[in-house]
Length: 271
Image (tube, rainbow, N blue to C red; front, side, top):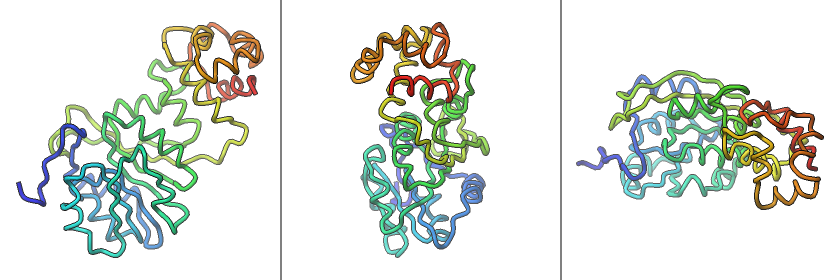
């Protein structure tokens, strides 16, 4: 196969976007500006990249598959506004890569198998990320946007809601990719909320994670089986039942029923 037609890797869960209408809809949603830096995670064969480099001031493309290096360099390597970063997005310091810019927007067609982990990494890097246009598996988006009380709600739902305002833009069928995946995808817009200074991240993330450890169990049972630093903090505060009572939440509820405000109250009850 020729250099301009790379073979998608099953190992990396690659599905190259090829539908020009979908590419244009993503570009229209992002509306890159001449004076801004745009990060693209997983440029693949460069279908979306080719549009970004024409519109944005700078494009920082982060790609993990070394086999795609010659493909991307051949197309964009001589452009002054293009930078290729061959690295794992899960370990990339995006704030450092966009320097001297202080902030950027991001666009990505995230691999289905590690989308949750990458979203968590991006939230950690939100100090330099203003907005994200992200394509994910449709089922992941449904879980991500599930409200309190929904059976679909989980750790990812709470994490994203705590830090982002999320808007689903449109669905994408399997035929838009090469090779076609077995599932539908969705494109979402994610904007980071103003910093919640009252939220202790050191406790918030482990608490939510522990709360969803076994979804069928109550919040009390799950927190009673917490480990590590969270277990120490709970013990120091009299145990899970005391903390939950102090937070004024019902001990027998399941984690999926809690709102962001209630999670925050649980965390504050341990501070």
